Image 1: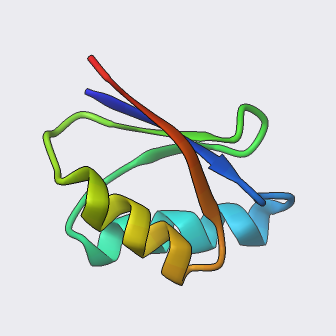
Image 2 (image 1 turned 45 degrees about the vertical axis):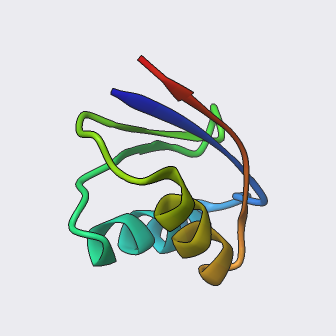
Length: 66
């Protein structure tokens, strides 16, 4: 499991953009607008996650594995 803290999400539209960024990687993520984080239940390359979130217009603050 990974918890990805994301900076810049402010509304449901932002949340959808982040969810879509994960889906484009083939990942189903549980994205929380309130907590500004996403949780995934699979191993995936951190750099690819960071790049996808950046491309969506947001910034990964931290990734916690485990």
